[in-house]
Length: 213
Image: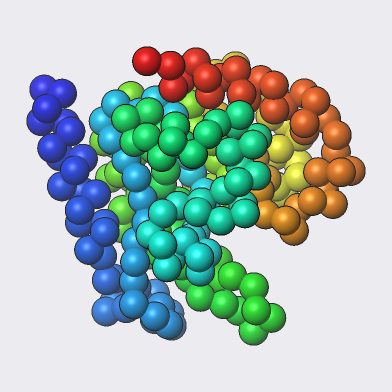
């Protein structure tokens, strides 16, 4: 049964990596460049890192969080690169699998809607062994809280949800809402020292337990 489940997951992951929906059948304007879906999943990893969407550097390398945001995230988790990219222990599946392009101000566009609509429910149904989810940013918060039966209010902001982290950390499936580890959030981190002194120690302990062999 485990081998069959693993094969099913592998087939679906291959389908996602070959996806061209946002170019060939887009919801709105097509992706402005060639797709390069980025994800790392396995049937054994108990930890899921659910981000927003790859940036341009990750689009070029094909390796999720291969950028300064990834360095900060690994520091938050107390995790080295080797462990972070060990798919036996860590799944990484963003809300948008491809770099979405830039908006008029030069910032990254939101994750493409096609990803969640076509792939996410099917993917997470094939990851029943996951028992800790790190939901990074508002799009991941809304999807994963709803998926796990705890839908957020439509007006819920990232700051508010992260502040309520204790409400979700004691569930049988532990869900940690996190801000994006981008340099743009440096000011927020300085204004909210509880994130480092209270949330991160609990997060690191939960992560360490999930990735232990």
